[in-house]
Length: 262
Ligand code: T3D
Image 1 (cartoon, rainbow, N blue to C red):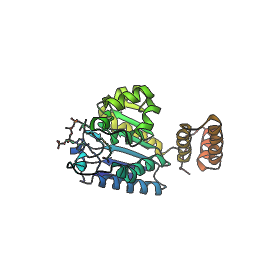
Image 2 (cartoon, rainbow, N blue to C red):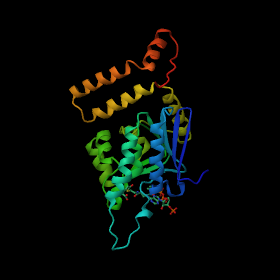
Image 3 (cartoon, rainbow, N blue to C red):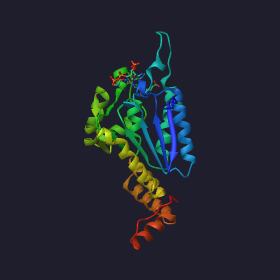
Image 4 (spheres, helix red, strand yellow):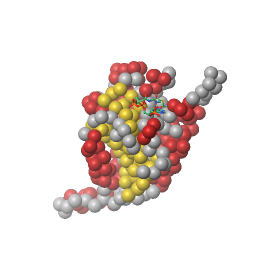
């Protein structure tokens, strides 16, 4: 396997990003964040890419920030806000803003920034042996990478507080039961199921999926009135698409639709 810390390949409309520092549980270094940024930019500009699948190599998904990059002497002054401002936040925003579905296959432990980047994805599958750890409080930090946003929305305040204050390990099964992720899958089935899901989404009406993502994200802060208006506008934008025409024609002709993503 390549020694690049992030692997990036595209085939049949599916872009695959694999975090690839298995010896260090794929913990994030600055070069990895740069590679991810460039790959996501390439995906954004490639209209033939209709789904992104993110996973990790080895036994972990991602153990968050590589703490060996943060080794410091007593008199070191460190500005963690700078990395967050310049690297993590743009990464999170670029994932959320992608107008294609983002599937995450959490193959092992996801800790700190690794957990929260997984939770930023649209559909999260996790191997039964995987776990999620809000590891920040264990090292004297607070949540980042959107953790303080996703956790209370996904699990409610009580569970978000428990997870974040205690930094305990949450099993994939519990994460599924709490609504933090879409599905927990047997380890040996994870990649097959994630690949099938990605292939199905790559054949789906991409612009409709983008509109669905936008509506669901907007609902996190909208009033009902604003949401009804947004639904009207998004539906209006889909009326002229080839895929809507194809969907209706296929239904009436009792055949499977062939969506082109246009
Ligand atoms: O700094 C900023 O820019 C601010 C932003 C921060 C974002 C964050 O993500 S803060 C949170 C950082 N992450 C952590 O605190 C998690 C640290 N890791 C762990 O607690 C444990 O490794 C795990 C619970 C995730 C897994 O435990 P275990 O027992 O399965 O594995 P291990 O033996 O601890 O780790 C295996 C190897 O990976 C080991 O290396 P070695 O000794 O075999 O050479 C370990 O040091 C390395 N590793 C794991 N996590 C990290 C790491 N190396 C560097 N940084 C890591 N985060």
